[in-house]
Image 1 (tube, rainbow, N blue to C red):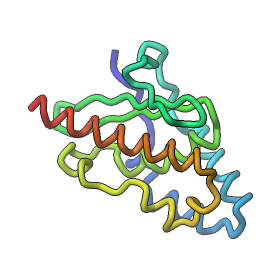
Image 2 (image 1 turned 120 degrees about the vertical axis):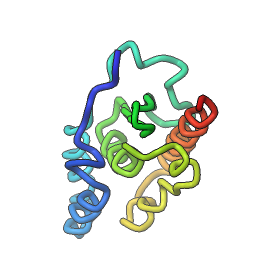
Image 3 (image 1 turned 30 degrees about the vertical axis):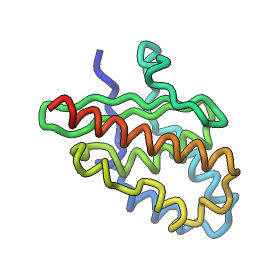
Image 4 (image 1 turned 90 degrees about the vertical axis):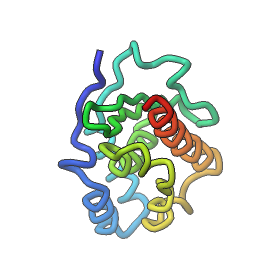
Amino acid sequence: MHLPDHPFATAITSQDIAERLQKSPHWEDRYRELIRLSRQMPTLPEEWRSVENEVFGCENRVWVAYELTPQGAMHFVLESESRIVKGLLALLLSQCEGQPPHVLVDKDLLSSLSELGLAQHLSTTRNSGLTAVAQAIKNAANAALERR
């Protein structure tokens, strides 16, 4: 079974998300915007919610599932039980979706959290969890490169 499609990195780019968040002057407004983004995230099918795809070290349960497309691009679905985490995952997804593995192994997926003023408002455990998700994305890219 293939992973579901979604609008991130195509119809909703990381630039779109940055612009939405920058229009929100207060953290509470940005928080609401992240929740709106979470509603556009695809639901990870149950068969993909495996131990192999679960990211440990997160405050809430999180899964990173991926496929390598025939064109050599990475297709990801990121899932969380928390709406705010799912919104933060949307930001990461907009940066990694559709990228070739060799680009992702060196990409700093977390820099946007600081650039948008989000990192300072996140708990230590949430920051640690997002770091673990970014590492899982890099691990997926490395695994895809090894299979070539």
